[in-house]
Image 1: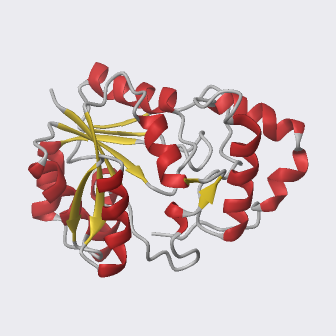
Image 2: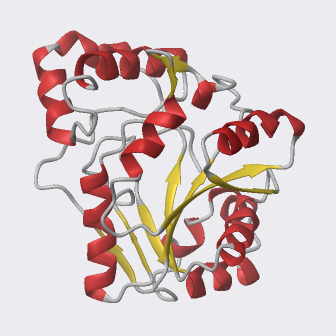
Length: 241
C-alpha cells in the first residue's frame, strides 16, 4: 500500500499572499512543515500540489531546489488537482495536508493514518469533529474514494475543498473521526493572516532550536506559559465552506 501525502500549496492567498514562503529564522514556513512530515512512520512520499498560475512558479522553484516532488493543476478545481496528483504518483492512500499548517505534529498525522488503516475506513479526519488545534489538520482517504468524488462531485464547494464530498455523504463512504483526549480546538495554529504568522513565528522561535520535532503538547505548554499569545489571533475567523 503506497501512502502519499499531498500538500496543496499556492502563493495566491487572499488575506496573506505568499504566506507559505514567509520566513522565520531564515527558513520558509513550508520548509518547516515538510521537515516535520518527513518524520512520519507511514508516509512513502510527499508531493506539493500547486497550480498552473505563473505566480506559483516560485513554489516549483522551491521544490526543485529542495528535491521535493511536485505537480501543477487547476487553481479552482482542487479536487481535480488532488486526483491528478494522486494518479501521477500512483497513490493507494492519500494524506491531505494544507500548506498553511507549518507546525503540524507528525505524531498526530501518524495517529490519523493508523486509525484509517486499522479500521478499514475510506475517509478519516481529525477535523470534522474538531478537538485538535486548527493547524494540525490531517485527512486520510483511499484513491478509490478520491476517484469516486472526482467523477461524481458537482458542487463548487466540493470541487474547491476536496474532501467535503466525503464527510457530507457518510451514507456513501465509510467515514471515521480521530479525536484528542483533551479538547484543544480553541487554539489556532494555521497561517492565514499576519496575526496568525506572528503567533507561529513566536512558537517556532521558542521551540524549534530546543526540539525541531516539538509536539502538540510542547506547544500547548508554551501557550499556557504565555496566555497573552492566545489573543494574538483569537479574533480571526476561518473561512466557511
